[in-house]
Length: 361
Image (tube, rainbow, N blue to C red):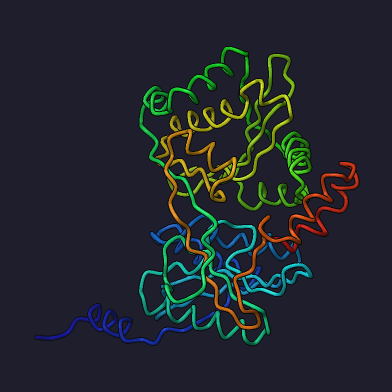
């Protein structure tokens, strides 16, 4: 039996070697191929999209190493990485800073292994203290892990009312309180209202604010996959706001801010209900409530909405340190930063914040 040219091509592709390449900013064809792979790969998340390379490099000036493995011109795996140097927390190669998910996304085990080997080679060449992969699923049980974080996800019912009834009674009452109080949601065309609420909110919690330029670039780079929804009171005054990402059939509320009065108005509960309602009406299938630290206020809030926590597997390969870094309030240095930051005037905090927070990713 004669072998057809199509079969010959298929055999040649299957036996071709895997090659590791680097994504270059400005290479439109390579970026398009990368994002096409991410859109189709089941392991990929919104944070594997190529646009993060531009944002991390342009806004925070971190060196990026976006690796991909291809065979016969076909991508089989991607791994976005960036180097973060911090006086407080050391020198790290991370997949990916400012992202809750990361690590390798692959369609074949061979390609995944090859990119992780290359990541370790890059880490050693850069002389970093550690490599951190923010995996959704465990890949290296023998690597030291940061088990502090979980994520919350749930399917969106096809009917709006079914989603309302799925909210536990106590939280549902809070949503209805916001409705009766005349709250309404609006989609913003820019980050102005969001940033004012966000910056004030994080300052009250003792955390430096990310620069407004970062949020502007998110809206620009991920246009069509990122938006801001702001809740206003009866007088039209903004009281709560959320910036969300959209990936395939999922919505991920990612950054948020509220003014102090939002609590009494039930604006926070109303905000997430409105995002859920709008997502349902768009035909989206999954509401990803994102990452929270175990046993914190946000952790309890999401559980009260009926979401169940799923562990995240942040795996570390240590080179110049003996333990997993603690970039959280469990670290005395971090607690000192929080306590100091709360005392700063908001204007000073917003000016100084971007210089500090770029190294906390």
